[in-house]
Amino acid sequence: MAKHICLGQITRPHGVRGEVCVDWYAEDTAYLDGEILLEYPDGSTRTAAIRSWRPHKNGLLVCLEGVDDRNAAELLRGVQLCVARESLPELPDNEAYIEDLFGRKVVLTDGTRVGVVHHIEMPAGQLLLALRDGEWEYLFPAREEFIVSLKDPIVIDPPPGLLETCRTPLQH
Image: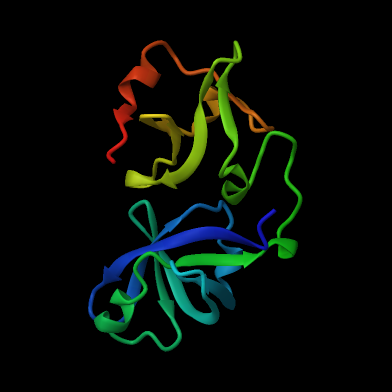
């Protein structure tokens, strides 16, 4: 299991005063009160104090201590906002932290393999599981009505035609 859990990701600067746009994956924003762990794409981490935050479109706008202009905010693109796993509550049976889904096999209700969770995407606030299998990638909507079980393997029950619609060939 991961030592840190990603609760959101900085996508871009907002304005000229250091504010950043964040795709927020968690339901609870209480983790934004105080300090948060920043995890950079190279794997390095540092703690940062959150000065303020506010809802914006399908995510959040966040001000971090020491990030006072657009240039400093630009350097944070792709940085994940994380917390220590031990600070999070235990989840009910059919819920999981996104971090725990990576690498899990995904099957249909009849056991047919669809792929493995490779990463997530969140366009317009819609959580998509990027499933990869061989030459294909599926950007599957992580909606409660399509997911039967989040145990390993993850079991999905998409409506007819959905998998074909969200399937694209992998670029090599």
